[in-house]
Image 1 (tube, rainbow, N blue to C red):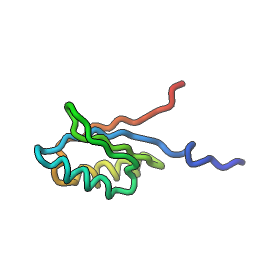
Image 2: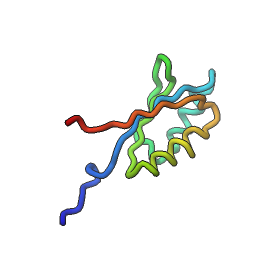
Image 3: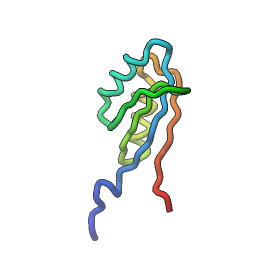
Image 4: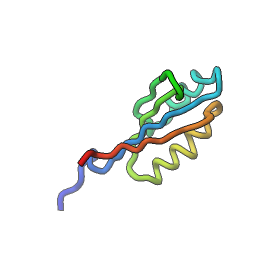
Length: 87
């Protein structure tokens, strides 16, 4: 039985983050410290930041999102978009 490659077992989620006014830079810096986050971007519009999480399973994703990201001071709201392959 062939082993699955890392690209076959990893999943991706994009997290839209709304911060308290004036805390964008602090939240951005804290996001850079989280190992599971592969990308972090400042955005304009309804959300202030966008982060990409690459995760092995939903439990790891939930732990990163709920236990780590939402606990950052200044994070007011998150919206998570889980990427799927188009069929």
